[in-house]
Length: 183
Length: 183
DNA sequence: TTCTCGAAGTTGAAGCTTCAAGTTGCTAAG
DNA sequence: CTTAGCAACTTGAAGCTTCAACTTCGAGAA
Image (cartoon, rainbow over all chains, first blue to last red; front, side, top):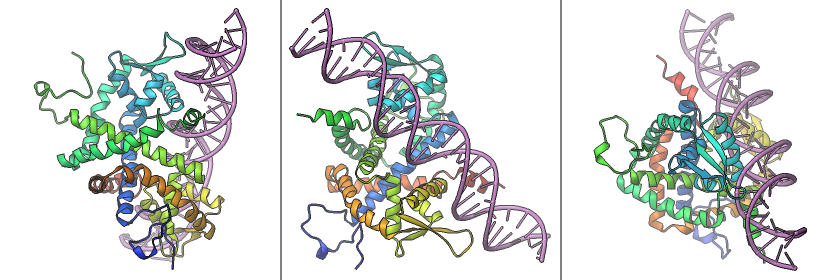
């Protein structure tokens, strides 16, 4: 008999191993979820690239800045808010600086650096943001009932709680985590 | 008064524009969703890279092949199943070939090419797959109630239907779509 | 038959992300 | 006071993805 990574629901072959693979129902949910988080970002990136010339991550960064009272954030915090590593962020800020949408300000304290949205960046965001949000609405909210939206929030909230619990501080600061586990 | 991309729920300022931005509730759902589809793939990729040396997309490709009766698929179809562009897939298959986990077979008909999982690739998959699936279970299914899992399936199903409806055939075949819209 | 078009792949370059290895400036221990 | 250690970046290289251009093969029109 052929071994399969994802078995059908055949209780006979289940053993007492510590590892359970996914069952049928779970597997199909998983496929859907993978499809969503592959296609949705791709669609958003593509639309943004075409219509505004920026990536989704760049957009998120600028939105995060625009929501601050002084339109600026320290990179470390911005990284968390935008769900990216500090390295990634640093590169992105450099690109955005080249396009004059963001400016770096050396923070007064310590080694802190702040990113600040320029007027130009703000204008750009106000111009292109609504276009993007329309796309978001079209692809996500227009196809869901209010109850489904509620459910979506609940489910993503739970998953994120788990992820944030261990990933901690932007993407995958594995070394940091390992360091913090030392005796 | 400051313009904001995401306004609070102030009915007074709403005009009859065709574009509605997101309201408060929608915005918070959106932030959660973005966080999930940023962090979850990052976490999975990181775990796979560390423990098995392959990316999530490579893994998906190999799983898709392993699920075929003859462990092979034509690239065009594989691209759809794995939610990637043909170009991306071609590059990935080349990499997997270099590692001897996959082999290209020139199809008999037309310009078709098939990718086939080698025995080595199959073994690798059987070895490392369960490790990955355990991670999937830990990050997703273990934190959700059965009802939430059901809801997740429903919501992702709806979103995917919309995405697949227009993105059509792997990621973002924009040119293809444009071509098909000509008079 | 011959021509033309389109589908299926491949390829190289450009752009992003990740990873590892630096800087640099606080801060606390000795 | 000085020094070790860490937090907060920065940087360059390696690896992936996307994009555009190109190659082939097959099918249908003329």
